[in-house]
Image 1 (cartoon, rainbow, N blue to C red):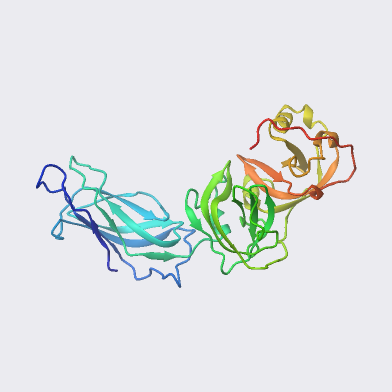
Image 2 (cartoon, helix red, strand yellow):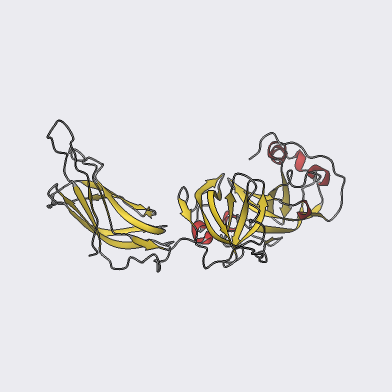
Length: 363
């Protein structure tokens, strides 16, 4: 067994001289020597990581306390697989804990805050020795089957960049996109970083990021990091990673779209539907959100260009064929192509232009 930390609380739970409920201490012992180090961490546990543990309860004299009751397990950071409650028998529980998505310094916690069997809870907490896991790559952060969440959702996390090639691909008025060029094109390796305003001057397309931390969230089902801490390789100007190509043969299932989310994409020979303003669904999205449709084979994408290409009025080009370059995001199942430069809309047939419609609501 690895040595454990002894944690507990001493105090009063009633009148003067009344001692608090037992247990006073909880020990969490790791049944493995494989804990990693900050210099040589364990791999980021994308799949379930299994570790034997033994939990013991002690009294105020640090002697065994024969608790027959329920304790609650947690792992921070990370997510436990399966049951989080353990049933102590005579003050001891031994078993195997499975968890995933832990990163950096990680500990297993056991707490007495359930109060079963009519007993008074002590609110004692015990923690294990530190395990050390690698920080996740962008791909590892996002790779799962649920397109409306990600593996670090609602965590404040640091991403693994030191041995990667994470390149800024585009900017907008509130942040920027970055792609990890070390992973396959469209392989869950793009992310949006929300900086609450135009990014600093050093953050330009082609810049390589060397540090990226932030509050991870799914904003309308698109992964983004907010309140970020960012460092850039001084003077870096790399080639942009290859774009995701969307053409007649492209897969537009939720899985494929999720894999390309946050990446720079290129649409070849997409068509603006001739009757899209007569289609209630599309006309409402255009009126309310300035989103206009383009079809590519059997797939339809929504495009947002009113802020960056104000001279392009989509209804005037209905029925025409376009080539588009932009950044892909999702809004609750709808793939949205964000145009970041007016030159990224190329018409096969030119048409008249007039000022764009002003959306009622922005999203």
